[in-house]
Image (cartoon, rainbow, N blue to C red; front, side, top):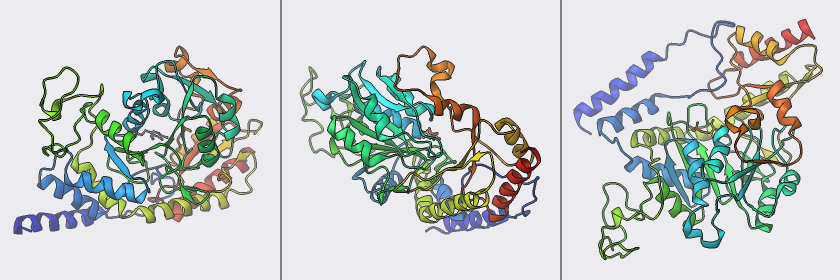
Amino acid sequence: MSDHRALVLDEVRKYHQEQQRDAGFVPGVTEIWPSGAVLDAEDRVALVEAALEMRIAAGRSSRKFESAFARRLKRRKAHLTNSGSSANLLAVSALTSHLLEDRRLRPGDEVITVAAGFPTTVNPILQNGLVPVFVDVDLATYNTTADRVAQAIGPRTRAIIIAHALGNPFEVAGIAELAAEHELFLIEDNCDAVGSTYDGRLTGTFGDLTTVSFYPAHHLTMGEGGCVLTSNLALARIVESLRDWGRDCWCEPGENDKCLKRFQYQMGTLPAGYDHKYIFSHVGYNLKATDLQAALGLTQLAKLDDFIDARKRNWQRLRDGLRDVPHLLLPEATPNSDPSWFGFVITVAPDAPFTRAALVNFLESRRIGTRRLFAGNLTRHPAYVDQPHRVVGDLTNSDIITDQTFWVGVYPGLTDEMLDYVIGSVKEFVEATG
Ligand SMILES: Cc1ncc(COP(=O)(O)O)c(C=O)c1O
């Protein structure tokens, strides 16, 4: 390492220390965020190192992250993207590839999903000219069931995409079995559930494709970022092509002739020997991430186990502390699962003597951050009203979620003192109004 570089990085560590001066937790004054990035000196150094080396496009750290993350999530391939939403777009779009021949999804084909969720789990279905089929979820787990999915399968159903709700696994083994039985693709949106297990097996390892988000609210962060993972090498190749402008070639930027036939292909009506780097086999995008993001991802990945433990501990503390509070439906882990929680979801009983809004406003007035279970019932949002879709069964619980549900944080940046203040505040409100 050059003297200047060592000096800069040393100063970065000192600067980080300087930034860490903790004013201490002051109840009602200190913000208790529902989620956030937990960044240490090594994260700051990794970003500065990447910047010093001007690794402004995908490069060394991106490749290293992709292979480390694939190993960690027990998939053969991982492809970094610029967001979790892009990862979902790539995963669904991959299923429409001509390379899948008669298994490819065609416009008008149906994809089963849940109504209560995040919009960009559903949007790629519509963006690909496919039709979402919405099913309801259970309260307390906030997940759908294999039974509901089975009822939704129709003659044009070709795939299923469902998120593990706020880290809580859905019945993924049963739904994967259904998918296999009916020859449907299964995509697990694992954006909120890195490290969760079902039947002792990591979520994201049951489906054909899985997606992750690295936005600061998530288990690991790169600022913005995401990932598509799969153990199906054909799907991996399609995802890479779609991510990288639709090109046929799989050389990294700056790399030449990895296939050893760069000038020996003849495709379509292109001239023989047309540069493989510029042959396009998909109508693609550019959804790549940069090496600065990946450098941060690598230092974050080293802390993943600690982050997961902290999320589980924080969730349990809230669960124990709120156990006997009336009028609240508390979250439950899906049977046979061990969730790596994203948030702590609370539903105010519809017959409670107070409203969700009143409780949320009280918590927010004490600087306790709250969030919605994303969109609630997506079909009620203006964006979806005129979109083609099918609903199977009723969406009663999705509507209850829209009206009565919110969540508070469990992310590793929260201390026991903060969590106890959350518990105490909820109890105080319910005792005063209940
Ligand atoms: C379940 C789920 N899917 C997808 C996304 C989209 O991820 P991103 O914000 O990185 O685009 C999110 C974001 O929070 C999410 O919670």
